[in-house]
Image 1: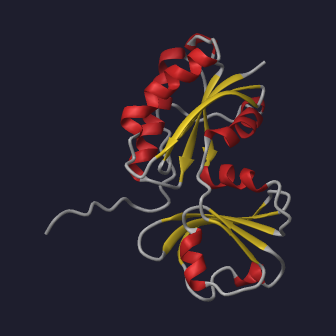
Image 2: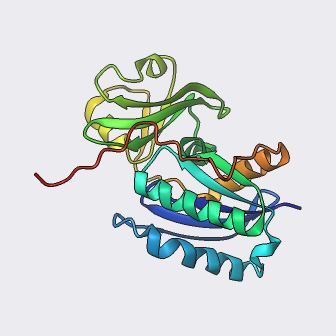
Length: 223
């Protein structure tokens, strides 16, 4: 039996779950544009532990959503995960945020699944999967224009899911498109993925692991 705590803080959704052998047995999440992860995350961890009637020493590993996503959100999640792993002497597992999002598309009859997260201006973070949830194009930060993703749109039906899908709606014109703009990354989908990595002993170095920012953080101050 593997008990894994899953932390998702890459976007506006602060999400925490506990999975037993890949099945979520407790989850707490709150999606707010205010990014209140610093106030909510540790409270949610305590609440899911209580709901599952577990002690932190019962955990076998901690999994964290590694990005891409919000710089601050990722830092909060990774810092919490590292602290728990150090204190409990258990492994750290990282899960791709976009791969986890793609798990929410299992019931759609499409040929390609493209999770897209909003970045600045007309830019998004995106990754492309086939209907079997196998990666067919790596993660990129890219600016959306009229030619974006046409290699996939011309081959079959495409599902865009996530906050960046709204930018795609504005620009892309194609009959083979489904948009799901309200989907956010959640720790619910991390349960199965973190179990696979746990069984393969695919762990991160707790001391040196850093989130996958994909591009440099830019601080925008007042002029």
